[in-house]
Image 1 (cartoon, one colour):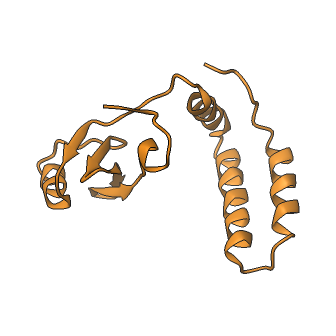
Image 2: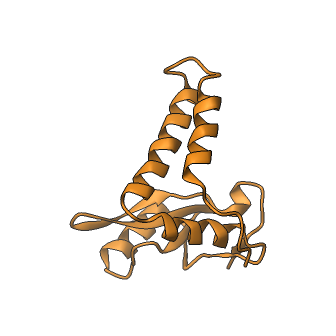
Length: 127
């Protein structure tokens, strides 16, 4: 696994700020830079920077593979499976060829769109 790059919050925020200023406030691009900056600040302020750095390095590792836990033909089948209690927070599943992540919300599990590498033009998934 790659041990670099190190996450330098100040440097990343500086770059995000500089790039953000190239776009009019309120544009899609400006909003995306602002959200990215706040995400990084949130991670830092909640003492999760080391967890994020590990996640970041893991995802950069050329040997990293996303493991798809279950395949479903339809969303209804996946929802029924979730209601059966077999789903677990952070499980990656596939519904009709599209990636979803099982997410724990207060009091229930739900499915969140989470495109698989093959949907994004890479081939880093593990079936």
